[in-house]
View 1 (cartoon, rainbow, N blue to C red):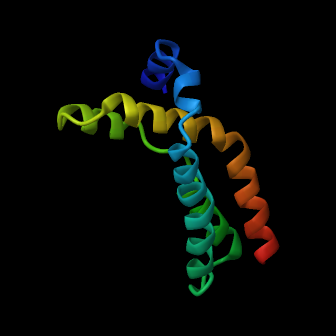
View 2: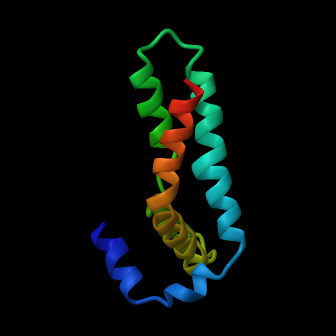
View 3: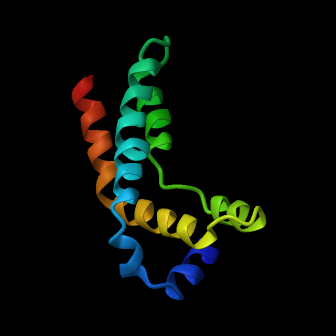
Length: 106
């Protein structure tokens, strides 16, 4: 969290918020996948609260280690950081929305 805060403070946030590709990542990674994962988890004989909790973990923002791996491999570390920024900002809305949708699915 300290690493992310320091990097976010030193980057052009608006530049990355304007990249449309990141919103596709948000839709798939933070909404579609967790909902599909929730449906698969419902097949297991577990408490419904455990199904919801595990599926919500899949709806969390991208990990900061992605940036470090991208930089070490010589890839676009800044682009990866932009993805983390957008998923983190969007998580304010997508996590509650995913939770609501999962609860509506029963």
